[in-house]
Image 1 (cartoon, rainbow, N blue to C red):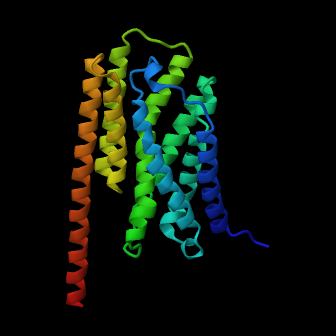
Image 2 (image 1 turned 135 degrees about the horizontal axis):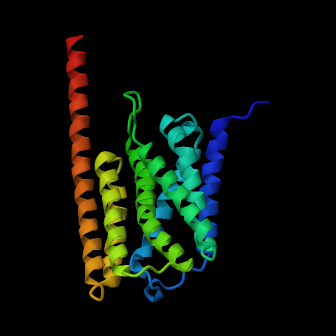
Image 3 (image 1 turned 90 degrees about the horizontal axis):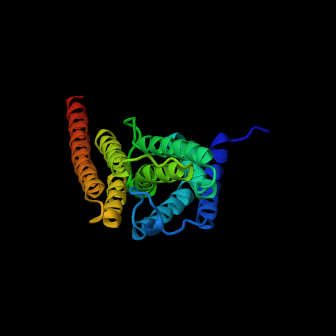
Length: 259
């Protein structure tokens, strides 16, 4: 009896989303305001997990439908999404093992961004529907965008837990926030799959600014600047994507008229 790999993928994604949620919410995250890190967002910013998991649960149900079993987009995104969402819940449980936590963070962000990038249709025969926009691209964009910011925050926490408290914390925090903004802006511009990605990164960076301003003006200003850059790149990337799509549609229509 042959195993249907598409069914295995569908089940794996559903289990990863449910399992990642259960493992994640059962951990002790502490109080962000009480920590020494200057790259962790304010407590209120973590409320973004509500729409993130609402989107991920909707995505898990959608991709598990029999009609979506051979969907080429879901085939490309499924394993990366399962890996990213499943591993993200374990970050909090590895806080006392900085080496393990850093490894989990690195694999999670790589898988999350990979899944997000692969959500874009790559062939003319792959029609991007409204359902794909809201049940595939938006959930994966929101999740991967927040994970991009969480990588900076979680990485800083892991380094602090390892006893690495380099002098000039404001300097390296500023550099880390600008780097997060640079990566977020590059992804939002080069791969404008969904504005949800840029929105999540911007939200996270704004949350950092809310937490550390006005006591730490330099990294606070860097967080605001980085967030603004990501938002601008997201809007510009979305416009470029729409223009390119309209051009392809016009070209296809012209070619059809000539036949």
